[in-house]
Length: 130
Image (cartoon, rainbow, N blue to C red):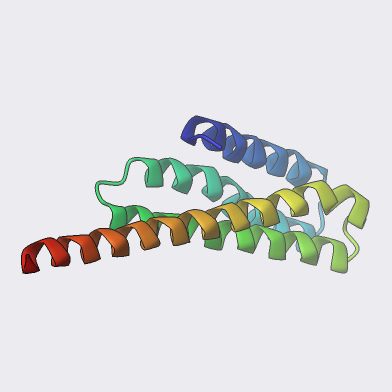
């Protein structure tokens, strides 16, 4: 998946999350969960865009970790929405799946970048020894 595609996907996730929030009941618990979902769900895309503007591999790894945390947090809030009975599992399942997939993508991306960075350091050390 390209950077552009992932930017579009995280933006679509935020928009879908906002639609789900609008469908939550206007109860105290509905408002609390709507606020949490709004923050974490929209933060995924915003932080991914920030990661794309990173100035170094270390900074990108750090920012992708934030995206991972926000996607996982979104999955948690969605679980609470269904566990509390505010929406059915059928209503939240597509967004829950997307939150899990985005979390997995960020984990894999972070690990790949970290491996590349480590390999680069090892190669630099080897070239200094020679």
